[in-house]
Amino acid sequence: MAGVESRGSAAAGHFEFSPDYAVPPGETLLDVLEEREMSQAELARRADLSAKHLKRLIESRAPLSTDVALRLERATDVPARFWLDRESNYRERQARLAGRLHQDRR
Picture 1: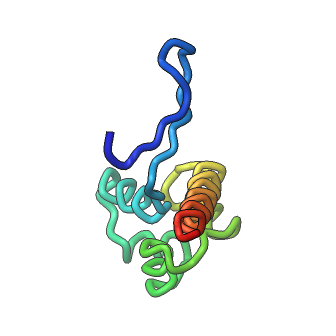
Picture 2 (picture 1 turned 180 degrees about the vertical axis):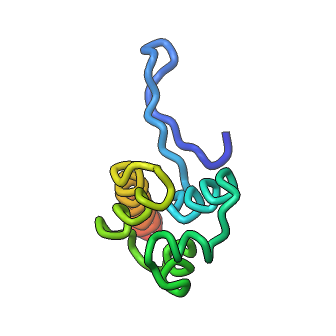
């Protein structure tokens, strides 16, 4: 399967899922907005964020902090823990991918 590295054996019944991409929380946020039929401007207002900061979050140019996660929770009814997990998973995946690229260059 392209874009996925697996380790282990089918006989052993386990594989390590290791995609070669990282999904930023901003993509998930856009999905939530679409599902709730909410504009970015409305979210910025409800979460008390500037439109510029929200855009930077969506574009993954700003990290998603605990404060922002709590604001998103209030504005979207999606738990802050979910947003923080998305951010953490994204940053971890980016670091692993960067390490993989570094190893490939040796």
